[in-house]
Length: 289
Image (cartoon, rainbow, N blue to C red; front, side, top):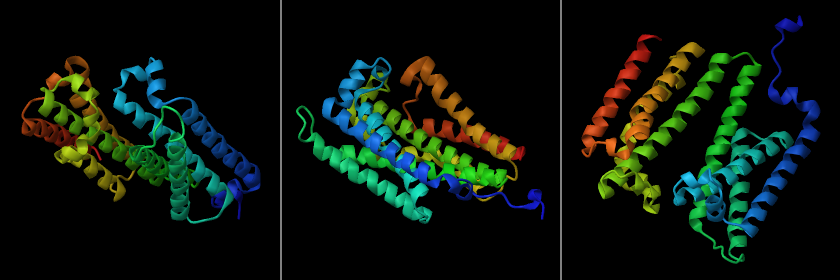
């Protein structure tokens, strides 16, 4: 059998020779990131860093906690996943669960640590933010590993199925939250952009669950790709680009030009507009598959 006929090695086989140094490097990265989180908790707070940063200053104050906790513990979970994968030969559900568990245990330890720091307090809400960031990142890390493994084996369509599905689902989650915030801001303050600065808006999806209707077109695309109805990367790419463009046209451009005042006061008008936009790109993309 020639080398051309041999199956491509998996990622684990290809990296087996370097397993020990990779494992040491991965766990060192985990320890270093834990140390950085401990240092920040000891010497500053997300609010103080956000106030001192020109970039973070453009975000509402309540979102700074989400940015810091979600990012910090998301990265910790991803690094832990890679460290466990490079050290043990466990099945992936065990690796995902263990990486998430390690990050959450450290999140609790970090909150306990903050309770002893002057000017800082422990918060169960922060642990929730840690959990959301960690869960999203560990699933993204797993998806990246699977997608890359498909590429190593020359399974480009299968790789795209994983990659594009994750991308469309993340976009759906973002759209649902944005729509819920707009509804919450509109019902209380006449669709004023300033309303997004209030802390209550971060729980808008809980109070405005009808915003989930906005993600139906995204779920339809995710299901279409997951069921293998797209037989090429080109077809997958078209289906993913379509909702991205619609989000830009329906959300980003009007918001950038007019602010929240452009959103109609009647929620049913808004959802009808979204349904028509979603149906248009879904039908258009379907015609070209």
